[in-house]
Length: 499
Image (tube, rainbow, N blue to C red; front, side, top):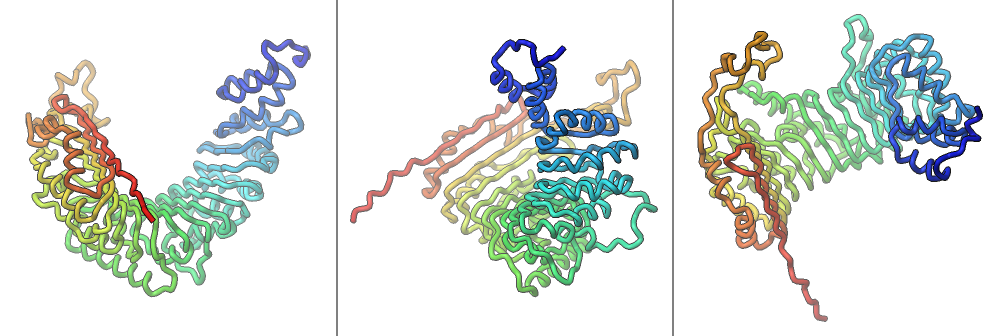
């Protein structure tokens, strides 16, 4: 039967609109309604990212793209190849068909190295695509880098996640770090690239005779690497605005004297390399990371907005970081031990003199063997905060306090998947771990229960004349201490300028 002659229940344009708003399964159902819908609804099926997983998925996808003289390929915008083996015959078909994806803008390989190593013909096929703006490489290595080096994509963003875990015999004999250095392998896209993200990706310490320059790059993220040597970032990315760094060192901060000496030496080396070159940043708009991360980098530029995590073990680096960065907007995530300091020295640091916006995030675990006992004088702590806000003439203040509580004995089965209870034995029958119960009512709990946040916000306004907005929020799982919040903004009268 010729479906083009079927009488449709709604006007054609209404059906097309419905198809454009429906999910993929509904759109596929619309294809059988008429020949015109088969043509027009096909493009809506491709609105969502296409994920290919193995032979059957690829074969079905290519069959779907063939009708109407392969015209559906021009509507493909986003494609992801998930980790799955592909047969040689299917890989050959994909190689022959993928050049039709001339409007493909987003491409992701979730197991790049193994797939490209197994089917090298995929490399020139994908590299020749003309319109890729966003690339994600997961589990990549030299084959993935070869593909990127061969491209001339107008990239807007590039993401490198995790270097491939290859077998010893799979690693190339000659593997210079510079072959994995992102700024090298993406150099054909240096005129357009705006965002670069690297997670657990080596090659960051490459020493090159010349460094390619990315004039448009504004955002750089380097996560999960041992302390990088970042001086050349200022060469390759002269107009950088936003920087995120999370080093392995900041994830393992139990330091003895040898570790401390190594951290100091790392900063001194990076500082010397940065200052010895001509290219510098005068200022960055944003930095996100740990206090130790920024300390290790050795940069001397000012940072407008900083988002930092701070613990008792990294407190010693805080004065140096603040002296260098002198932020005007600071989000500080502090540990329970810093909250309980009799005198929170970090709130009196001279580097905070220019602070116009302060956000304090505190996560507290109360009770338990390793928990915080909740003996903080919150009134005194907030008094130190008010002193800081007054000295800096701060305009905005936000305080988030999250309190969670150890609830006493916990069954082994909840802590380890390798110690499930015997069949027929309930958690109540199972012998619990030895853990002291949480204190019944700590000073912190008492303060949370009694505090009037609206009144506290008004107190901030009364004592800090520069403040324009205050946001206070307490979140607690303790049934004895309900969550609460308050927001207050100061309405200032307009100044009547008389000439």
